[in-house]
Image (cartoon, rainbow, N blue to C red; front, side, top):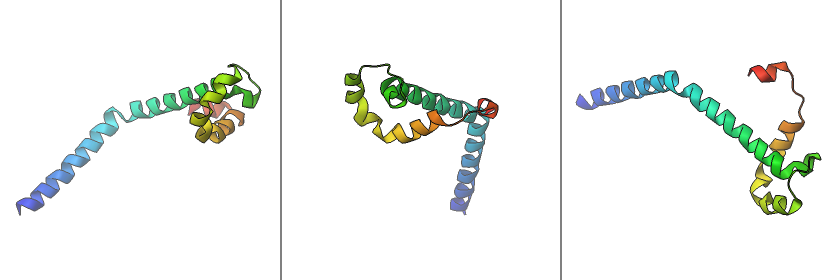
Length: 91
């Protein structure tokens, strides 16, 4: 009987913890992830801007950073070249 109560109390504690997380920090977490993504895209723009015709850094430094940037290039190019409208700023 005590194991069932521990199981119920454990589930209740987990539910309360998730609820408090959702009320207190979920929005801050989403904003931090959005900011991180924007900073990553800005970094790739600065280092690999030659791919879009925006030479900012000399090619030597871009080539040194290329192995670290390759996995993100396709999504970065898609994000940079897509059309943007007013609703993108609201989200």
